[in-house]
Image 1: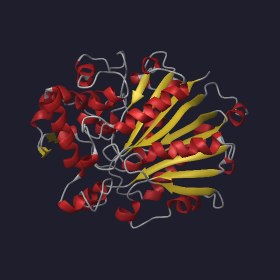
Image 2 (image 1 turned 120 degrees about the vertical axis):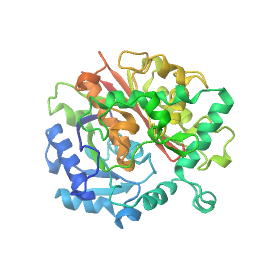
Image 3 (image 1 turned 180 degrees about the vertical axis):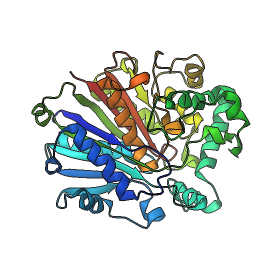
Image 4 (image 1 turned 90 degrees about the horizontal axis):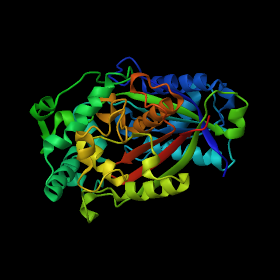
Length: 388
């Protein structure tokens, strides 16, 4: 397996892009990444497009060929990658394997989702497709409802308080203020969260990631290819893993842990030859505040039932034990589903390059991005390292 590095990144602001189509958003992010990498379109040998719902919401599939056409590189190997909300992390994993295997020297991984043009009921229908349609969706369950079950089970099992778990959302909004690409660049208080409407008991509106449009892209290449570009800083992919769990919650022994995260993380730490304590900065999948807390535990930074303590004690702040979601996370940066995992990679790359502005973690050398599909049915863990 060859060494693989990230040589370029690009993204769009997340929001309500009424004047931009799915293809417009993707090509904008892709061209920014290509420009950042200082390469030409002709250098791209393969392309992986992560997306969850284009077939249902836009009536458009076959995104690989579509985006290759609009980028002006028909003929390139290209395909769509779908793993629900974890599509971006899985697409990055496939891009990594494509280069590491020696099959390609330079590939583009881009994620895109357009959700705000659709009515809310259609978006709700699209999102529950992340779970089992026949056994779960058919009885009226929603994706928010499934996460509410996890939330309630966690508070019951560990006697945790909602006001402590909800602090994760407050944290994310604090750091979104520093991110010009974030959907909601405003601070909120714990009181704001707990007074916001309940959308599925016990989840409040301000504990839930918003609907949004956006696209992000990264360029991956072999180390040999990258050296020709003579860049000052290279970011190496130290580990890339994917794991699955049973798709639905009713098949699981414990609703308060994501087994796929634990499996993928264990493999990633071993692959990178590191331990959790070696991670300098992290992006986790906080589609709901409870998930952010659970991920801190499953990734090895807190005992089960105590992840909320890291939030409450300031350990996930920029100068804390494990700086986490310093661009706003899914809650405030936004969550254009199929693109979210790629946004996380871009943010980790910025940290390792020293380009994170007011959210920069001093001396950050190793970063981790966790991308989750469904309620943990699929999890991708990608670990990156600054190599010079």
